Amino acid sequence: MRHDQILFDLDGTLSDPVLGIGRSINFALERHGFPSLADEQVSRYIGPPLDEGFRAITGRDDAPLIHALVAAYRERYGDIGYAENVLYPGVPEALQALADAGLALGLVTSKRRDFAEKILALFGLDSFFRFVDGGEIGVQKWQQIAALRERGAVGLDAVMVGDRAVDLVAAHRNGLTGAGVLWGHGSREELLAEAPRYLFEAPIQWTHWCVSPAE
Image (cartoon, rainbow, N blue to C red; front, top):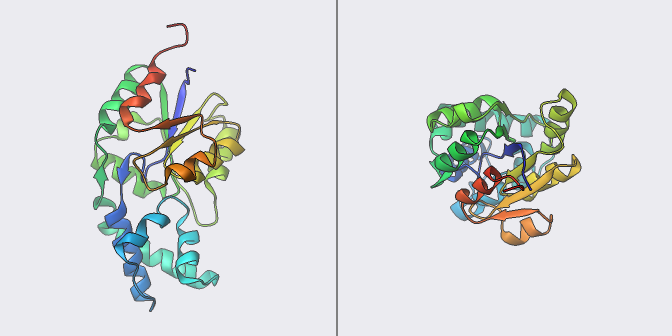
C-alpha cells in the first residue's frame, strides 16, 4: 500500500535519547529527594508522556510535585540532555529517500516541540519535516494526532511510525495505519499486541513506500 504522508515518532525511532533522558530524569529525582534510576530502568520510560513517567517512578500523583519534577528535568534536558543523543544508522538516508519520492513527512512526539526541533537541527534532519508537533503535560499522543486531524494537517491515508505501543494506539484511535520499529525501546511483543500493519527491522525498509502499488 502506498502512503502519501508519514508521521514519525522521535525518541527510539529516529534517535536514541537514553543517555540524556536518563541523566535528566535522575537530575530531577535527586533534586526532589528521590533515589536515582539505574541505567537499565531508563528505557521503559522513553516514549510515553514525561508526567506519566514521573508518576510511575515516584508512585506519587501529586500534581505540584509532578510539575516540579518535569520542570527540573526540562531544565537539564534543554541545556545539555537533548544533545546526549545518538542517531540510529540509516535514518538520514531513509528520510532522504522518502522526501525525494515526494512523501509528506511529519514529526509527532510526546516531548516539547522546541526540544524536538533542537534535536532535528542537531542531526541536520529538520528540512525533511513539513511540521513538528510536540506534547504538553496531560496531553496524550492520540490527542495530538486528533488535533492535527481536526486542523487538516493529517489525512486518513497517513501512517504513524514509532517504537512504542503508545505510537500505535495513537494511530489506531485516529483511524490511521500503525507501523512499529524494532530498534527502539519497545519490545516486539509490546508492538505486536497493538497489531501494527508494518514492523520494521531497519530504516531502509521505510523506503518501500516510495514504490506505488501500480509498480
